[in-house]
Length: 326
Image 1 (cartoon, rainbow, N blue to C red):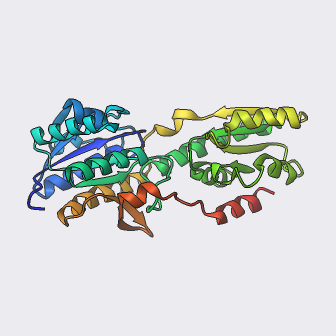
Image 2 (image 1 turned 90 degrees about the vertical axis):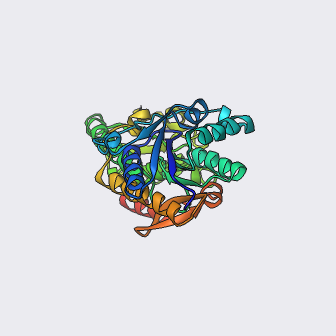
Image 3 (image 1 turned 30 degrees about the vertical axis):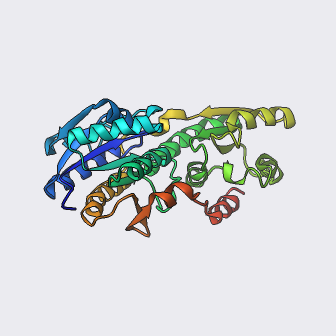
């Protein structure tokens, strides 16, 4: 820890509510522990172009309640190349940044891992993604807020679905993971969730229809994860129109609505805890780990595990949804 005097913070990939709470916690915890903090704008792109500013306590005042990220975020193809990472490392040297805290998802942590391997820089990751798809943590920053946004939207859709006796397919985010769709369906009292994890096992639409979803209900809502594997909500709506033309079908795609909004108390708390833990990890000499939460306890997850391993869906949740949708 003696060699670390200055840390850099960046947010990368898709934004998630609670990222600002994490930036605030990292900044203030670092200053509390006698470190200098530098905010890096626009993710890895800012690390290459040198868009960097020293952060004091006041730089992170009144941001805990804001969605998005004050540091901005951007995709950066250049950072995926060895040349791009070399430029980023040279920028870090010039700015006197000794360690990096990266808030983001799978791709962001992959970038941190590569930089750490190639230039022996201590890197700590925070799981900032609404998809909740990172292995080694029970929840990710932004997931709870996105889930509540979905819940609010589906509650409103239910009103019109019931009035018109319609079948609604509601598409939610989760390119490779069905956590938002499955838990959103349970929370909203939806009839089914179509998720990528089970798409190869069964015809999920066939199962839904076969279960006789119209026996006791005059409207139905199905949450669909936006995935190439599932084909998305429009794919299923087209199938129903062709295979079961007796049903009046509608589609709602929630899209980027799910990324925005003020973070919930839960997201603010886990972002704050993880932010403080990232500085503690650096002070303990930890490197190349993601901060996770398991059974409400802070854990350190090696980047290799967090990135490589798929986070499994709890099949018990599928049983809960099936039993309650009769």
